[in-house]
Amino acid sequence: MSRVPGPVAPHDPAWRGHAAADARSADAPAPDVRLVATDLDGTLLAPDGTVSPRTAAALADAEAAGLDVVFVTARPHRWLTELQAHVAGHGVAICANGASVVDVAGLRVLEEHGMDRARVAALAARLRDAWGADAVHLAVESAEGFAAEHGFVSTHDVPLGSRTAARIEDVLPATTLKVLLQATGRTAEVDAFVAEAQRAVGDLAHVSSSATVPLGEIAAPGVTKAATLAAWAARRGVAPSQVWAVGDAPNDLPMLRWAGRSFAVANALPAVLAAVDATLPSNADDGVAVLLERAAALARARDLRGRG
Image 1: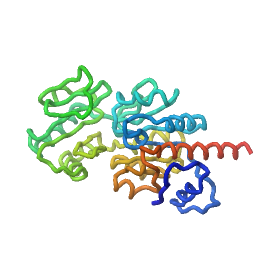
Image 2: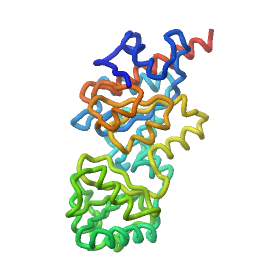
Image 3: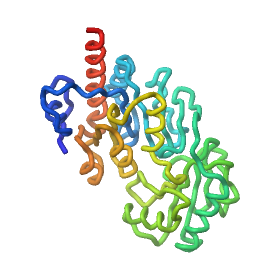
Image 4: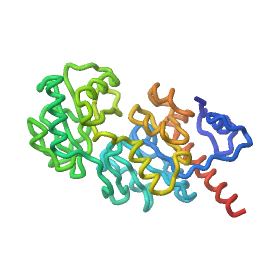
């Protein structure tokens, strides 16, 4: 892994040092980047959850350079309003860890990769059987909104009109994008919590987490950020080698492994820092803006070569 120290201009020699991560020589052709995939919380967004002026400018510049920028997040689509001013007419987000594809400008759900009521009820039963009915607390995200069991404690504002019940089965939508899992009396270590939850649900679902506390995020089998991003890119003729991806948390790892070039912001968790090709400045220091600026410069250079 190489490190990009501080904000780096596209022509700065420090970035060329970073490019050694893929073992190419200094005079090798510049990478052909066409798509930048970025996580949001802890990555593109500043610590206060906003888009910094430099990042906003970098997003606009990337669009002008003809790059696709895809936001890939655990967030439900209703939490994307902060981005709407910065994506012009074509911003796309992959939400709920891959369970939906959303047009950011209009907050329209374009694709769903969810679970039906029977599957959610079955995985809830498995969790209660494994951990005890009183220990398991569930909530669900869907295109329609949020619903939760009475014992689920949300760390975010709950939308007005959200349905609650003693058992999640009584308030399930037709299609659930993501099940949220809290549990009492379980390990406080996030990776161990996720592993225990995965063993409990078995092949019914895929469990991950983007949190620093034990909160399971449960999706349909095979649904990850990487899987949905790969399908989206393939439909546009973009190869994995033409994708740069950046994140900060374990739920980003499949996407980072799939992309041709992988990056982490400096504030990422240790497992993510160890897995990527290069490290950017932190989200407090506009690390994703650094990446977008470099990608835009490369895209313009590619276009100039094509016209030459």
